[in-house]
Image 1 (tube, rainbow, N blue to C red):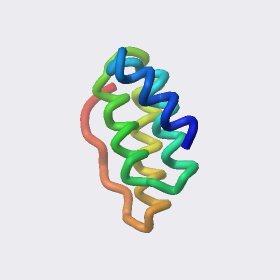
Image 2 (image 1 turned 120 degrees about the horizontal axis):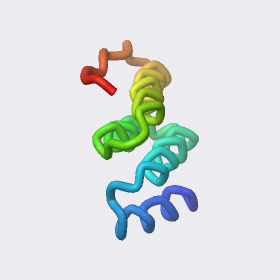
Image 3 (image 1 turned 90 degrees about the vertical axis):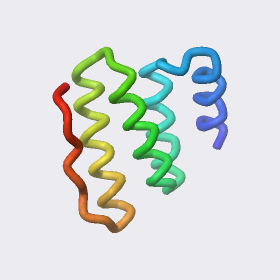
Image 4 (image 1 turned 180 degrees about the vertical axis):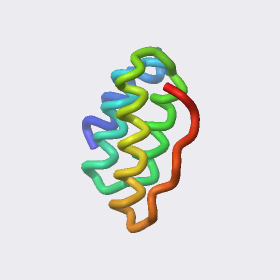
Length: 79
């Protein structure tokens, strides 16, 4: 939970910080909060920037859906 708090503090001043969004997704995932993790990864995609991080965020959304017991959905859009 400390990591979630730290990421949210960074995002409060820089909401498009791709690194903080990615770390927030991982922090939520480690807490098994898969819906919150997927949302953080989705925000990372929409923040733009590094195409590899955006592609990886799409992959992580699918992983979160699997871990939550749902069939992964296709995440559309080009990177």
